[in-house]
Length: 244
Picture 1: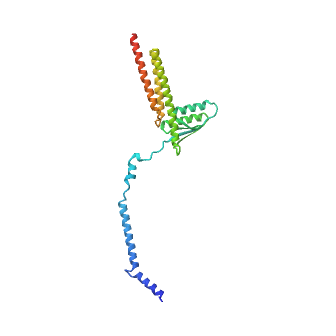
Picture 2: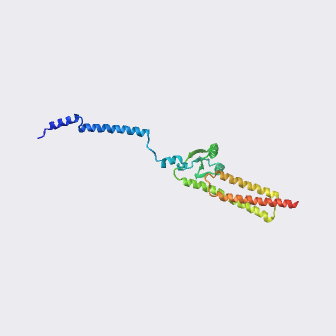
Picture 3: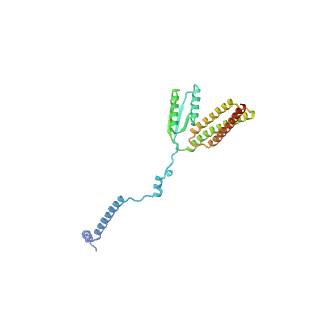
């Protein structure tokens, strides 16, 4: 029969004697702690290399950075129902700025210094009409493509209208050639009409923040108008010379 007390005493004596398994365990623990401290010092002095192929290139390459969605200025307003001319006035002002309506009395423009200044001024005018108006600066969380499409469509409509007016201008020039009506008075009138087209296109281009595709046709139509105007002017000058 084994005496439990004797076995317990042997175990205690083994724990206290150097060179035993317990002492070896303490030694291993001390060595591990020392290694851990040396490793920590080495890591602090020489940090681990980063993945330059991914994180480093993103920091140095501007194209790799996230592209933020364009900001928008949104005007939310209410105007008294009478007189009706007040509503028409605000609508024309917003249309002239190139704003699009997200819904009734909620208009949006791409963020910009000139746009903000114009909308601040319009808000002040609405308040003077006894209306209410809130001007907000924001970005879209969802539906950005729909807002951009609406803005592009509005610019394309304007470009298309310019193309139509250019066709009318060209038809008028052709009519003068057919009638052989070459006078300085007519030339001056045509020059005024042409300059109006030039100014109109410049205004639309100025508010075309995202490059609507319809601009190419408008540019081409206006260039043709300029060419035909020069041709008509040359004929007027020629007729003037022949007359003297």
